[in-house]
Image (tube, rainbow, N blue to C red):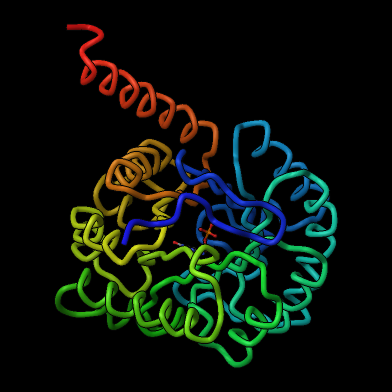
Length: 289
Ligand code: HH2
């Protein structure tokens, strides 16, 4: 089955005929990539506005870091960080995604009007699936993670990552559909770096088209991940080039949504890809021949 042309979310039907850029807004003091700099609500909101000026189509707000070994946060603390920014971000006129795995946080964010639940646990934590079912309209991103954030890199998955990730994502998506979530609300994410080795992550990129066959839009989060550091020797802050390259390669292999820190550079790179595709189409129609 071919993936849907829109991603239906609470307020917006996102047009997946063009790649959608999801800008990351970290409200955490300990995120792996830009830890702490945006924890203060005003700074976070300015960051949201900046990402929109740079061309983001979706903003992904996360109040708890999921980097390997990060300290888990209570739902109450997570909400304290999230809600002041969310209230204002919802006025910006774009889809707002909430990066959380806690039912209580999802519920509060959806009550305020959030558009998407982005869950690294694919709604496997207590109560999470029920919140999404009850809401009836929000978009959902289901991500694959091997083990859990505290232990995933200590014992990464073994064997064929693409096959295992595919089976997991298909099972989660089917379970949700059977429970009543419309297919057009779902996007799937192979979870780059979540309990995977560098070789696994590369396998997932090289064979990404196999995951497209599941028939759901794919969301990819390569931005500043450690695999890019391992391949280039660059520190987190220096990984814009490899992050943009990975996002572009993911889109070329059929990704509909890319989750990125560096929105301006990614949007610019995607314009080249789009121009190239348009030129190739004209060429194919014989206009230049
Ligand atoms: N990666 C992180 C967090 N959330 N969500 C999706 N759907 N896909 C991802 O690849 C993904 C995600 C990484 O977590 P964190 O350590 O909090 O860093 P950052 O939010 O800066 O990417």
